[in-house]
Length: 192
Length: 298
Image (cartoon, each protein chain N blue to C red):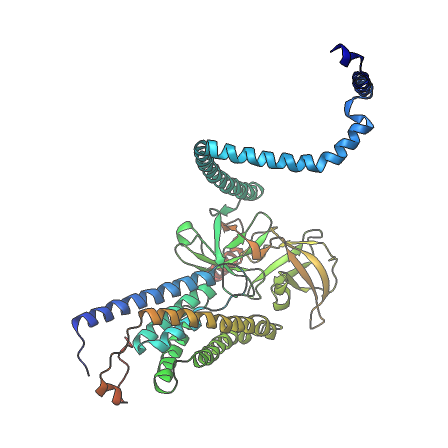
C-alpha cells in the first residue's frame, strides 16, 4: 500500500469528521420532520440509515442504524429499542451486501431500501396491530402501513441524492498506486 | 378702433360672447355640469383627460421621488422599523390571548368539578408518527405530578389517558384507540350504559365506538355520552361524545353506536391532566377493604 503523506492524512480525517457531522445533522432533521404534524409521513430514517450504511464502514453502519432506530421508536411511540435492533441488523446486512455483492448504484439502493422498509412496516403492523386482533385490522395495513411504505420508498430517491452529494463532497478519494490498481483484492480505503 | 367697433367682425364676436354668457347663465340655472353640452364634452374627453392626468401624475411623482428621495428613504426605514415592532407586539399579544383563552377554558373545569386535582395546562408536543389512533405526547411528566393512567381532558370533553410517563414528557392514549375502554352512560337517561372503545374503522373518521349496550335501551342519535365513573380511573359525569348512529354489535347480542367525540382529538394544542378526583381507584380501595375484612375474620 502507498504511504499517505501527513497532509493527505489530515484531509482524510477532517473530511471523515465533517461527513459524519453532516450525516447526523441529516438524521436530526429527518427526526424533526417525522415528529411534526398529524399526517402520515415517510419513515425517513430508514433510507437514511441504509444510505449511510452502504457507503461507510460496518461499525459506523451498525451504530447509525441503532441510532436511527431509537429515533424511530421515539417518534412512532414504539418500544424503545425495537426499531433500533431491526435497523442495526439491516444496516449491517446492507453494508455487507454492498461490500461483497452489489455496486453502489441507485437501483440497488432503492431495492434494498424498499425491502428493508417493507419488512420494517410489516413487522410494525404484525407486532403492534395484527397480533392484538383488532376488528378490521387489515385496513391498518392497507391504509397506514402500505401508504407509509410507499412514502418511504419515494422519499428514498431524495435521500439518495442528498447522500450522494454529501459523499461526493466529503468522501475522501481513493489514492492508488499503479501497483495497487492492478491488485484486485484491495479493500477500499475510504470506508472510515 | 372706431372702424373695428363698427365692423361686422366686432358684432359677430359680441354676439358670440353674448351667446357664451347666455350659456353660462343657462348653466347656472341648470347646476353647472349637467348641461348636455358639458356632459358630452366630458364624456368625450374623459379618457384623454384620464390618460393625461395619469401621465402628469406619474411625472410629478417621479420628480417628487427624485427630489425627496432621501427623506422618503428615511421615512420608509422608520416605518419599517415601526411595523416590525408592531408585528412583534401583535404576535406576543396573540400568543398571550390564546394562552388566556386556553386557561379560561381550564378554569371552568375546576369551577364545575371542585374535587378535581388538575395539572398545569399541558402543551401537545406532537402526535405519535403514523399512529392511526392519534396518540400524542405532552410536555408534562412525573415531576409535574402526572402518573400513568391519569385521565386527560379539555374543557369540551375526555381525550384519553396517560400511558407512559417520564420526568418531563407523557404519552397519551386517546379514546380512538381500541386499547382504551371507558365505561359510559347516556347523559339524558343516566341508565343506558356501555363501553366506549376505539375501533379501526371509526378511528379513520375521528370517531369512537360505544359497545356492549343492552338491547333494551333508549339511546338515540344526538345523545351525549358521559363517563360512568364506575372504574375509578375516570371521574364521573365527564362528557365523552355524542351518538351519531346506533346499530347492532357483530355478534348481534348487544347494541353499539358510533360516537363523535366532544373533542377533535386530531387537532389538539393543549390539554389538562386530572391527577386526582373523588372516587379515584374506588375499586381498588373496595377490594383492599374486602381483603382486610377477610383477614380480620381469619
